[in-house]
Amino acid sequence: MSGAASRVGEVHRQTKETDVRVEIDLDGVGRYAVDTGVPFFDHMLESFAKHGLFDLELSAKGDLAVDLHHTVEDVGITLGQAVRRALGDAAGIRRYGSQVLPMAEAKVEVSLDVSNRPYLVYAVKLENDRVGSFDASLAEDFLYAFSQNAGIDLHVELRYGKSPHHVVEAIFKGMARALRSAVERDARVEGLPTVKGAL
Image 1 (spheres, helix red, strand yellow):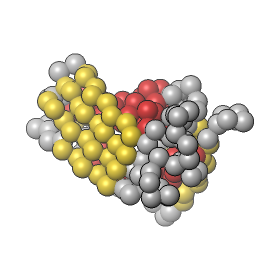
Image 2 (cartoon, one colour):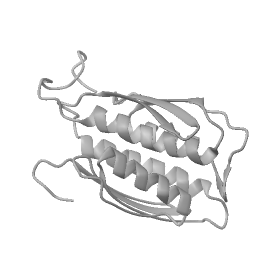
Image 3 (cartoon, helix red, strand yellow):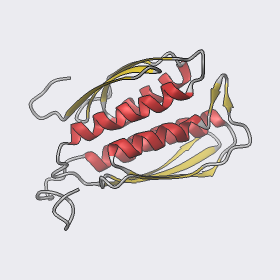
Image 4 (tube, helix red, strand yellow):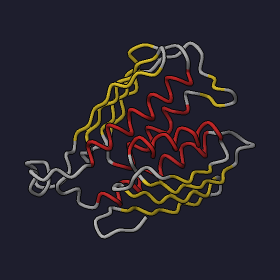
C-alpha cells in the first residue's frame, strides 16, 4: 500500500479487551485483507474498502466470548484514528460527501463533513436487529467510535427498509462512497476547505 502520492494511516491499539491493527490508504483501489473474528462485520468492512476505493489491512483479536461490542467499538476507534492520520492536515480535500444508497427493499442516506468536529446523528430504527449472531445495533457503536476518532460529522438516516442485513450493508457502502467523495483531492481547492484556517 505504498506510493508517493498515497495518504496512508497506520494504527495499532491494544487494550485488555482487544488488539487491533489497521493500515488504510485513502488513495487505493479497494484492496482489502480483513479479519476481526466476526464474519458479518468483516463483510461490512470489506464492502467499506471496496466501495470507498480504500486499500485496507485490518486485523482484530477481541474477547468475543464475552460480547462482540468491544471488538466492534475498538475497530471503529482504530480505523477512525488511521483515517485521521492518513488525512494529515486535510489540505485540498473536498471535505463534504453524501450518498443515497438503495439495497433491495432498503434505502439509506449518509452525509458527512470531514470537519475535525465529530458528531453522529443515527436515525435508524429496525423492528428486527439480528443478522445471524450479529446485533445490527452494533453498527451505531461502530459509527460513533469511528466518527469521534476520525473527526467526522456523520449523519445516517434510514429512509425505509426491513432487512437488518440490507440496512447495515447500505450504511457501510453509503458511508464508504460519501467518505471517498469527501477525502478526494480537488484541484481547485487551495489549502484547507475552510475560512477558519484549520480543520
